[in-house]
Image 1 (cartoon, helix red, strand yellow):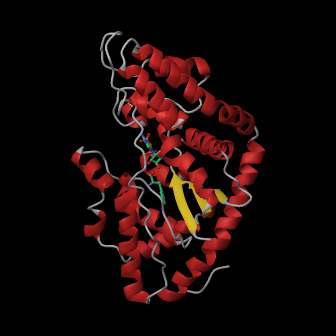
Image 2 (image 1 turned 90 degrees about the horizontal axis):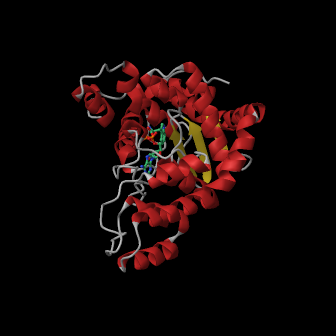
Image 3 (image 1 turned 90 degrees about the vertical axis):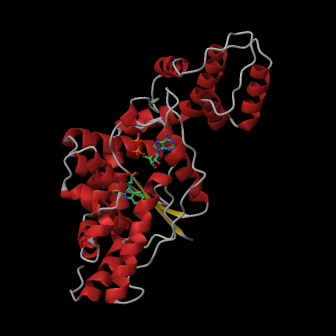
Length: 325
Ligand code: ADP
Ligand code: TRP
């Protein structure tokens, strides 16, 4: 079975954009791949996270994956920093990666354009991400468009390493860029993102969820006039949570006029709440059980270590080092 690998940074509360764009498809993928998922806490350090938040959010994401249906007995879920040899692997990649390549990375260019302080971790981010991918011999890396450049850079780094140290030392991942991955709109209609402050947290309680959904921006077409649901945040969310039949039904009713946005949003709230509430209940149970979460991550780290170690040793041998055990 092919190996599919992805990482999520433990920064900020999980919102429904993360759920629909990353977690739900990740759960689906268990049917056709051996899935390797990790919490990218080492990557989170580039923004100097508060240690208490970092630890809490790592467990929040772990519980979210498990509540959403990740089977950690068949697949692998771990905390990146528990297999810190990935930083060693990143070093081997760093030493074959030019300044020119890294300075083209969007994250670095954005930070520079905004005249933000750029630490070495942020500049070198693509090498650590490449190490994440290649130390686990990933076949497929399903990422959204925003991460496409990083995965392509990983392939470049593998190519440089192999051309210096021998073909086949590093396996080049197939990059499954998910062109069709949905972009979930936020409350204001822009992409839902914690950096825009327009999110619906995945595990809001019912009351807050309803309040947030009712606050989604809509146009001010009067109640009696026909309304176009297509490509509105309300329409996109309804389809994502309740399916296209429910969407088409509401679209038909809205287009006749006489139905207001407030009513449509109530339907969206119901749809989200129905889909999320079993996961929310499981989440609340699992999240309380920190020993279980830590044990699951520890087991995952052992499995990840066993996969990564021979790959690391291949690189060590190639550069002229002795193997580690
Ligand atoms: P944020 O934009 O809130 O900072 P992240 O960049 O941490 O979110 O994203 C974590 C994961 O969730 C990534 O796989 C990303 O592609 C996905 N994701 C984030 N926001 C959205 C969205 N609005 N629609 C679809 N997927 C999203
Ligand atoms: N850079 C990714 C993000 O910001 C997270 C990530 C780290 C990742 N390492 C990865 C994703 C390896 C896929 C594969 O969302």
